[in-house]
Length: 262
Length: 248
Ligand SMILES: Nc1ncnc2c1ncn2[C@@H]1O[C@H](COP(=O)(O)OP(=O)(O)O)[C@@H](O)[C@H]1O
Ligand SMILES: [Mg+2]
Image: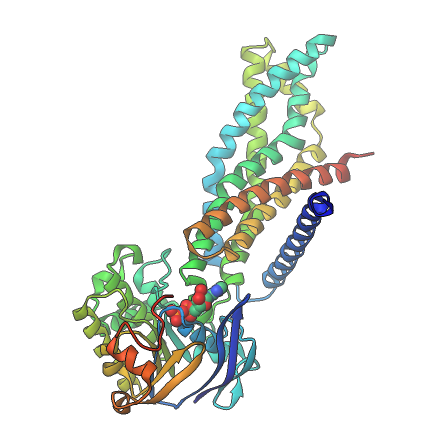
C-alpha cells in the first residue's frame, strides 16, 4: 500500500537526482573544454574544417528557415495589426521579431538538429570503434583535437548564421509585404531601418553565440559518453539533439529576461 | 620492463581483473591468451592508462605509470587495436603518419608521408593504398594499415590486440610473420593478445594465460605443450569438455 503510494515520489526523486547529476557532469565537461581552449596545442586545421562543416554547410538550412518564417511573420502581424488599424507596424515588428527572437532561436534549433546530431554520431562512432582510445595512444588529447575545434567553430559560426538568417527573414517579410500586403517597397525599407536598433541585432547575435556553444558541447558530450554498440551511438545522437534543443530554449528565455526585462 | 602487481578492475558489479601479477621483460615477446571476454583488452588498456585500474600497481621501468609524464610515457608505445581503430576521416597515409604530423617533434608533411609509405610497404601495402580511406580497405588491409600506424614512430613497446582475428589463415600467417619480424628487427618489447594458437607459436617468447581475472599459467612457449595445467591444456586443444565452462 505505502510502497505503491510512494512510488511516484521515488520516481520524481530519482529523476531530479539524475538530472542534477547530468547537469553537474555537463558543467564539468564544459569547464574542461574552456581550460583546453586556453592551453596549447591547438589544431587550426581542425578548426577550419569544422567552420566549413558547421558554419558554411548550415547556411542553406538556416536561410530557408528564415525566409519562410519572415514571410509567415509578416502575414500574421498584418492580420493581428489590422484588428486595431495598426497594419503599418508590419515592417518594424518583423525586423524586431526576427533579430531578437526568431533568427537566433530558429537558427539555433535548426543547427541543433543538423550539427549536434552529426557531432554526436561521429564522436560516438569514434568512441565505440576505439578511435578515441587510438587518439590518446597517439599522444593526442581528444578534448583538444575533437571537442575544442567543434565548440569554437559552432560558437563563432552561429552569430554569422544568425546575421544571415535575420537579413533573409526580413527580406522574406519584405517580399510578402510588398507583393501580398500592398506595402510600398520604399516605405517598407524605411520603416524597417527607422525602427530597428543596433541592440536588437546585437542581442540576437550574442544569443546565437551561446546557442552555438550549447549545440557543440551537447554533441561532443553525448558522443564522448556514448554507450557501446550501434544502439549506444543512436541514443547518444538523440540525447544530443533533444538536450541541445531544450537548453537552447531555456537559455533563450534567460537571456531575453537578462537583456530586455526592464 | 613492465610489471603488474595485483591489478584489479571492475566495471560496475562485474569484476574483470581480480589481481594480475605479470612481468614483461624488455625486448621479449609475450603473448597473452584467454577466452573471449576474460579481460585481455582491458588489461592492455589498464597498462596504457586508457582504463583506470581499481587497485594494484603498474610499473614501467620501476616507475608507477599513473604518476609519469603522460606524453613521454605514451610516446614509447604503439598499439594495434582489436578493431583496427583507423581514423575514417583521413586517408590511410595520414593515419599512419598521425603521430609524425603532430606534437613537438613533428616532421614536414612530405617527409612524414615518405615515412608512412615506407611503413606501409613494410606491411605489404603499396603506395596507391596510401591515398585510400580506411573504409575502402578490406579487413586484412585495415589490420595491416593499423599495424603500420602502430610501428610508424618506432616505439619501444608495442601492443597487438588480436592481430589475426577475422582474417583468413593465409593472411593470419602473413601478419604473424610480420609481427615476429618487426619485433625482432626493431628490438621492441611486444605484448600480443590472441586466442589463435598458431599466432602464439609464431610470435611468443613467453606465454601467459588469463582466466577468471587472474594469470592462470605463464612460462616460455617451449614449455607450453608439456605444461600440466588442465585449463591451459583445454585451451590449446580446444576441447569442449574440461575445467573451462563452455557456457558463457
Ligand atoms: N568500457 C567498458 N565498460 C563496461 N564493461 C566493459 C568495458 N570494457 C570491457 N568491458 C567488459 O569487460 C569484459 C572483458 O572485456 P575485454 O577485455 O574486451 O575482453 P577480451 O578478453 O575478449 O579482450 C567484458 O565482459 C566486457 O563486457
Ligand atoms: Mg579484446
